[in-house]
Image 1 (cartoon, helix red, strand yellow):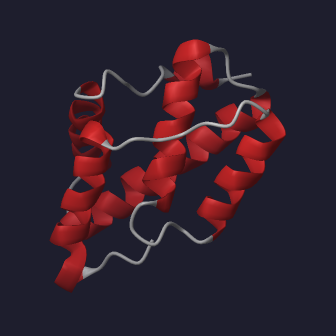
Image 2 (image 1 turned 180 degrees about the vertical axis):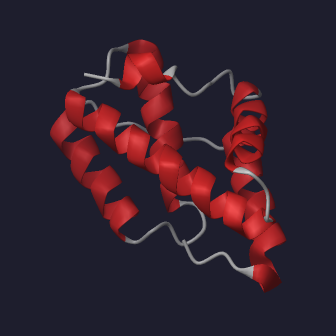
Length: 119
């Protein structure tokens, strides 16, 4: 993701702020969404691309069940974001996941339970 010591705290705060109240737009066609999210993840997010994909998928999951590919993409985005922020903040992944859940809850979003992520 590119977050390391010097700018890590600033970048982490940008991510948390975006998850709190950042806006995402969603395309109705799943193929377009998949390509757009894949393109963002391929660049590992230059600050907000990965959180944008994650949040967009969480917003979409509120209105309809995610496709198998979208569930896998959400799983991957969650894993990458949690592990990278844990590394950047030098904290346990569980602690970072709680922090992300608190930020997401301000947008009335939450990570799905692990059992609902399985196809």
